[in-house]
Each structure stands twice: as structure tokens, then as C-alpha cells.
Amino acid sequence: MGNNENNHVKVPKDHPRLTSLMYRHKIIEGMKNLVVAEAGLIAHGRGECFDYILGEITNKIAIQAINAAVAQLLLAQHPVISVNGNVAALCPEDLVLLSKTLNAPLEINLFYRKKGRIDAIKKLLKKAGAQKILGVDENTMVEIEELSSNRRMVDPSGIKISDVVFVPLEDGDRTEALKKLGKTVIAVDLNPLSRTAIWADITIVDNIIRTLPLMVKIALQYKKYTKEQLKNIVNEFDNKKNIQDILEFIIEYINLQKEKAFDILYK
Image (cartoon, rainbow, N blue to C red; front, side):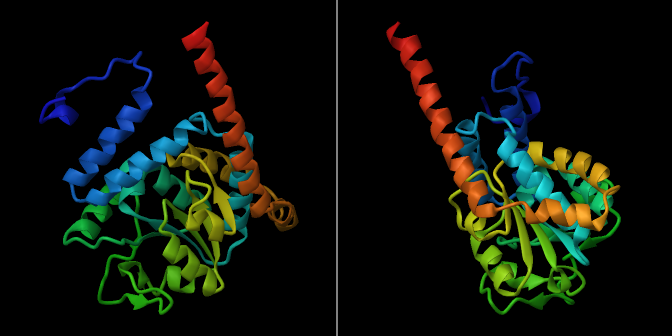
């Protein structure tokens, strides 16, 4: 593509990988602007692989998990949306809109704390319309003792006192730590077998770029529901069954694609 592909290469609108390439370039730009860590590029590519075997759609199983996640966040006393570099680079506007819709603050929480990254993410979120962002003052941060990585540093007004934490594109070690602290964890993870997916209370196996706008739409609807209605939605959700259903979906999808490929190659 050349050295300046992000600035000069125009992907044709009829390109079959148009959406994927657009967001790939967002991640690359995010890395150049310190928002995304270098390892974030690898993580994004790994996610794309899983999205392929999900058909790159938000299926009914994921929608059920999204419904439960939104209901849980609306029932929370102190909900918090945890933000890392990849999520901020991919969909900052959707993050801010979801935060405002749910009345759940955004808290920056990073594994790779390269100098300038927090400021870069804060600037990006501010540009997207965020007014108050937690996790930016290192002098006031406190530790989660159950964790040894940089993610142990949390805001005393945010994740520390939260009862429900939304952790899109999360590290499994912190999900496990948050669970041990008695917090309800909602995750977005394209890998249904990751530690994050297994440990979370509600696992949305979907692409974050599709999940967040749908969460906003559902939140606007669910805000009109009673607490009892929201509790029923949460209680009817079974995360173990959710993951099992997703795995069955993947198996069926791969088998279908195998048949299609054979038809093309050997007809």
C-alpha cells in the first residue's frame, strides 16, 4: 500500500472488505496518535478472524446478550464503562453516546501505559463529546489488590465503587479480578473461549462496532421499562448457554461455508 496508505489509498465503495478496511485504518491511525498500543493491532487482527467465522453479523444470540447487558446496566447503582485504546479508536462517538444514554461514566483503563496514551485517549473522547472522563488523574488512582498488571489502577469514583462494569475488548485477568471483588462484569469479546468471555456475567460475542450502536438503541427503549421488566430480562439470561449457543452457531457456519467452498471448487 505504500508508506502513507491511511492518508492516500482510497478503498472502492464496492470493495467486499470495505468496512473491515475502514476500521483497520482507524486502528492504525490510533496507533500513530498514541491511542492504540502496538499490541492493539495484533488484538484487532485476531478479532477480525473470529468475526469471519461469525459471518460478520450480529446474530440473534448476540442480540439476546445485548438485551441482558443493557438491562443490567440500567439496573446498576454505579455502572461504569471501561475504555481502552482500541475501543476509543474504533468508536469514540458511540462510547460517548452510550455513556450519556445509560448515565454511566467512561473510565480509561490501560494495560500498556505508554507516556501520553491517557492524554491522547482523553483528547479523542473529548472531541467525541465526552464531558467527564475518569481514570485520567494518576495522583488519585487506587489499586485493585487482586491484580498485578497496570490495569490494577482504577479511579476511586469509578470502577472502585462500581457494581456493574462494562468491559469491551477486555483483558481476562482483570475480568477475573473484578469478579472476585463481587462486581458484575459485562464483556464484548469476539472470542467466545477467552478468559474474559468465560468469566463475565454477560458475554456479548460480537464486533464492538456493531454492538455499541445497538446498545444505544435498546437502552433508549429499555429506559421506559420498569425495574421488574428489566430484572426479568436479566434473570432469563444464562451466560453458559449463551456461549454454548455461540459455539454451536460457529460450528454450523463453518460447515455451511465448507459446503459452499466445495461447490465452488469442485462443481
